[in-house]
Amino acid sequence: MELRLLKELVKKGEGEHVEFKLKSSHPEKIVREVVAFANTGGGKLFVGVGDDKTIKGLKDADEDEFTLTRAIDKYIYPKISYKKERVPVSQDRDVLVLTIPRSVDKPHYVVDETGTRQAYIRVEDKSLQASREMKEIMRRGRGERDIRFQYGDKEQKLMKLLDEKQSVTVDLFATVAGIPRKIASNTLVVMVLARILDVHPQEMIDKFTMSMSYQSN
Image (cartoon, rainbow, N blue to C red; front, side, top):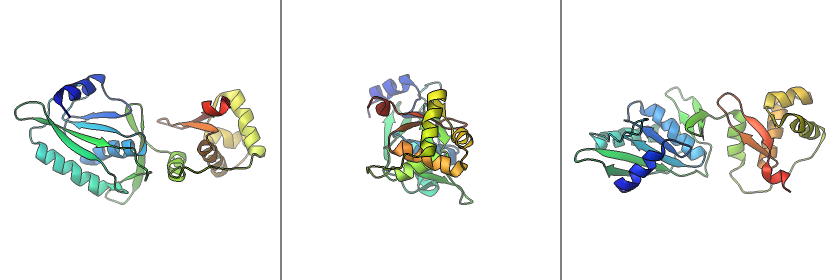
C-alpha cells in the first residue's frame, strides 16, 4: 500500500471495515477487532494511527508485528487468514496494516487464558460481542443451501407482531407467542437464514425485522 492511499483511507475515519490502533499494547484486546472483521464483512486494522486520524507510525514495527502475530495465533480460534504489510510514513516509522478477509469458517472466537471463548462482530465502527443468535446464524449459514421450515402458529404470531411493532427481539417474541425463549430464538434464526427476516445486531440486544427482499417478493 502506498502512503497516498493510506492517508486517503485514514482521512475517512474508522467504520465497519476500518479500525485504528496507535500501538500494539494490549494485543489480547486488538484481536477482538480481527475476529470481528473475520466474522462480519472483513476489514483493515491500521496500527500506528490514532483515533484522531493522526498517522504517527511505529518506532519498532518489527516488535509490534511480532506481538500482534503471536496474539492472533494464540487467542483466535479457529485460525484466520490475513495479510500483513508495512507502509513507511517517515524515515524511521511505519504503519502496520492487517487486512482481514470475511471468513467462510465463522464464527471465530477470542479464547482467553482460562479457555473462555467469545465471538465478536463488527457493527458500524465498534466490535461487539455476538449474541447466541448471531453465533448460530454464522455457524448454520456457512453453506449456501436452501433453508426450509414449516409455517405454523408461532410463525403466524411473529408476522402479526412484526406488522404491529416493525421490529422484535427474542424475548418479546417468546412472551407474545407464549413459547420458550429457546424455541423463539431458533425460529428467528431459521427465518433469517431463509432470508425472510433481517437481523440487526446492537450493543445490548439484537432486533429482527422483515427482510426488504422478502417484502418485495
